[in-house]
Image (cartoon, rainbow, N blue to C red; front, top):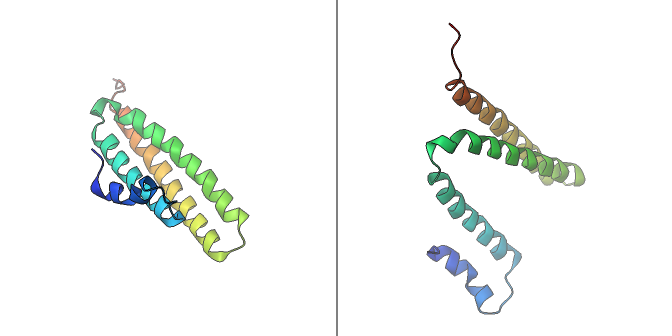
Length: 112
């Protein structure tokens, strides 16, 4: 079932009108929120560690994009948002690796 907000955002497209860039970006954002929510809550606990590894890889791609956005622009706002994106993605990556390392430590055999 498609959420009502997503249908409202997609209505201009269905009517044959070209969406404005803001409408299109907002639609993608809202759909990503719903898809992300349903994907995360449908994961079994056994898949948690591999999923964390994949999200760490996705965050590394975000860092590359943020570096490109921050370095390619001469606007202060773009550089600021790029720096913030790099900082938050780096925190996410290192935190994800720490959580994954700790989870995998629970499955290791203990030395006697």
